[in-house]
Length: 130
Image (cartoon, rainbow, N blue to C red; front, top):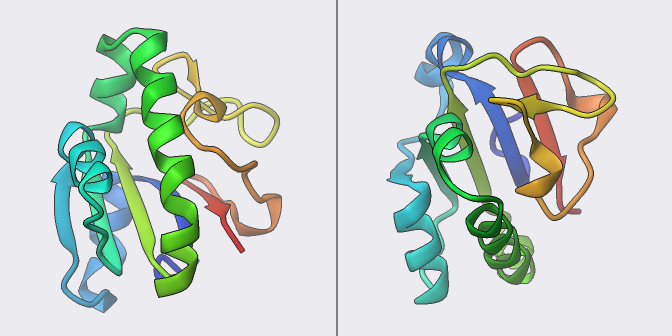
């Protein structure tokens, strides 16, 4: 698993804790702040986004689709700088590999690219953008 690979990564908190010492110092934010920062044109090479499971469990489908649209707009800039966004969850990632879900919400609602079966393992999914 290469969390610095350009794309969107979904990882359980415990798994991230196991590998975080090997990561360069990332920028950390929440989903709400991430949307605001992308809208303002602020992207970072390595971003940890906390609270995806809380967001999926408490926000409406319309809000989730708005996040997807915002992430989709950021893909070109992410590719240009090789950016990686790591979405950390405390909840289990369910229904892997067919239709991954967190809090009974399909992750396809959030991420504008399909997940890669080549880059998945228990507690981790990758949505590459290359």
